[in-house]
Length: 235
Image (tube, rainbow, N blue to C red; front, side):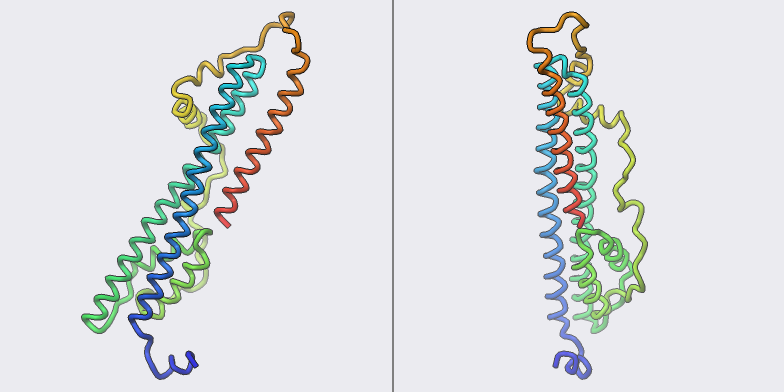
């Protein structure tokens, strides 16, 4: 019935605007949830860095392993912050699209016609490539095409390199900066801890090696869980 109506009657502009606004709000809420989740993960990662640092101070024999762990967690923290910044930028861009869409419908109401906006089309084309928004942004782009606000996009655009998360290892200087920030300048103390010289073993030293292996396994498990949450946000 709706398809038959569309042949004889033009779409209702008010209904189109309501649907566009609904899709935009839905996407904004989705981004807000992802950003909130990343903030929680960031706070947990900071705690893990602090715990590794304290472990090094309590047990000098584990200082080397603890220093490695803090740097691994610092790299994860850098990735989390980059993704959070990308989502915040996308949210601002999406809200800008919403304002432009409402303005376009207002002009249409006054002038009785509407012109395709290359600015909105560019923003929508960027946002539709975000894994977090792909489905609903495609639906929004279809509605905007029906309303004449953007032209129909032919095919899928290749992912923009600026939207892809870098796989390269973060610069050591950036890792140092993050560690100094979290540890409040105590980075040197963690890395300068050295194992006791041979021959000065304390009683119970033979039990420390299994403990270090357990700590390393725990670190790997924690990192795997964190990366799983990050991947889940992208899917």
